[in-house]
Image (tube, rainbow, N blue to C red; front, side, top):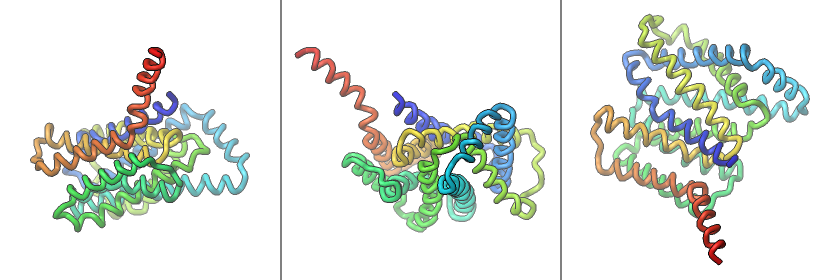
Length: 306
């Protein structure tokens, strides 16, 4: 039951992110960098207010816990927290660059490559074990991604960089388990904001005045930044990086369905088949969780018939 709670958190995070386009699409006339700047700055302001107004006891408890750590533990917490902020801000920077200067397909492909990279890096860095079926699921998802990238091999390099930054973020936060996750996320976003502030005067546009911008941005900050990022970090407390990584596929699959049925975009048979393979890979990778309970019920019934 405890394990299912963390799987649900991971699933919920990427399920929510799958609908990101609904809030982002109305802002297509605004510069991407402006959306990034205000997304980060508003997220930081919101999270600082929540921490200072409603979580003072947690802050005090975590501060006392940090002070009681050994110098080695303190160094590890600081490096993992700030390192996670670097990976997160790098991911957002690179994603916007790829979206604006390379292609939208390359940006989308990054979300499909990311689970594969996360699984492989977690195997080598964190020594996370994978069953034969899970390795089969990884190979299946690689095949699906290769099909999607046919005739677009120039995009793979940029997609790999985008995917690698988020994969490293997931893996680094798997090891960062000492402090409260909401506080860790707050520190990381504050750190990201500090990285962005020097670029704001030069690269930002005119201050938006439209209600639409701030309405959509509020939804993006709360529903598509704070909540899913916290759920993502929370999930890493109870399940390994590979399991969280493979859940990322939920995001582009939902986005793919929205593109077809809501935005009426054209889709090829090859794309449908590729996404179907990726969906199958998610089920295969998590087969132990999905079918263990059913098998247990069956085994119990068989035992009672003896």
